[in-house]
Length: 152
Image (cartoon, rainbow, N blue to C red; front, side):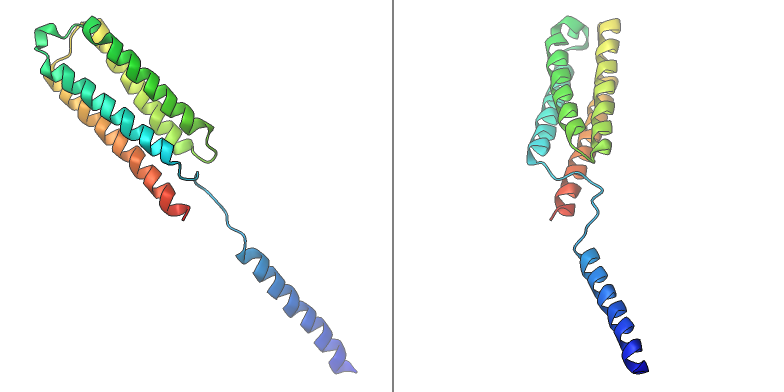
């Protein structure tokens, strides 16, 4: 009789542990946003636009780099950056990517303000800022690629 009493609670414990193990193995905790190929495409598109913008500045003689000549480009890229930021902000678990885009947007607005104030951009600044944005967009693209790997 004593053996039956010991076996029954032991069987319940073993069964409970088995069910608990089965239930927790089916659960996953997610810490990053899902990969979105449209965001990766947008990153590449905006990166290309920024690179082409700085290429145009560098191909223009320094004395002809008036803000008015480049104003439309600044505004178009500002809109592209806003769109990318919005895409990143509305995705759940995506604070890091949204912050990267916010930083790019702040730097872009600062470049636009500086160009407007000085009414010119030197070669050194244009090259440095072109490279700075390239690094930002590479970081964004790597982040998206990591999300693709994490969701597979």
